[in-house]
Length: 444
Ligand SMILES: Nc1ncnc2c1ncn2[C@@H]1O[C@H](COP(=O)(O)OP(=O)(O)O)[C@@H](O)[C@H]1O
Ligand SMILES: [Mg+2]
Image 1: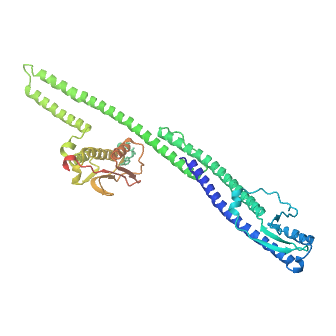
Image 2: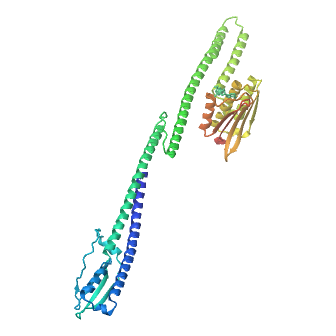
Image 3: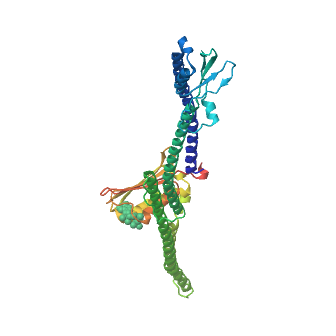
């Protein structure tokens, strides 16, 4: 059910409830006031009759006289007076009809609901000619009931009018609210379909404005993430191409030349006065050189020792190699023995992150010392591998646009971990990354 339908249903329900309760109260009120009015009119009429006919002498008065008296009493509202003859027949005796205000006649159910037991009284009078007549006094509530009916009707219509106004007002507000909701939904659909350019406008209602701002932020964040992904994908392909080029050049330069040399020497051995010993020495030199080249190429492609010797040995080898190539930089490596149990997928991420951090330290930091630490930690109740690489270099850089840092972040986040790059001017750079500590299958 839509929000609008729900609210409208609630309003209709409330109106019906108010009408039922209000109607019952109005009927009860009318009943009370009719009763009160009738009683007081009746008592007044009785008092007047008492006054007029209390002296025995009066009871013997002429017909015109008591007729006059009765006409006065008949003026009292809500009273009906009739005369009953000796023989019990009721003579329809009516004074001139009181000019009734033109009031709408109430429906019979209303009359029934409002009517209670009303009093009646009778008086015997003796006429001068010796006959007796009885004056019958009864309550006649119809004009009072009619009055109550018209008041109830007024009450009913005023409630209907009020509810109609409220109904229209609420629906007008809803109209504008729903327009905002539709605009926000359209914005979300655009985000869903990857259309990040079009922003949501601001809205007059502050809640909607806040939602729209969040949707815009979300769309912006997704846009940046998509751009990063695209850039990273392009960069990865670029690197792949470069690596292939380097490989092919090295194969051509090193292997090709060496093979040609070996072949030339093999041909030379066929000469009658070939200096076999010298040629053999040359071939051994070439083979040694080739072994170095092949090992270096293999290390670039994949640290083989990772699966053979484990993460600790591979990291130690990496740090030793960097230390040998950059003696001015002191590199410290700390680790827990447990990191050797790491699953190879996590281990290769750890290795590449340390490698990229050391490359950055050498390339950008102008540092004298770098500390690498890879440890197992309990973070928020879960085993994590925590990598920290700190240097004492120039620092003062933000995470920046480089692909190295971005690639590290992607690696860590792809494993459900977290990455943090901190840098203060003059205090070097601190990179921290933690990922779930996934152990090797067979070591469990
Ligand atoms: N250890 C560091 N010390 C100082 N600056 C650094 C360090 N690491 C990274 N940076 C800065 O962050 C930038 C981004 O690094 P990175 O993403 O690895 O890209 P790249 O190394 O290809 O320039 C670097 O260009 C450099 O300015
Ligand atoms: Mg880099």
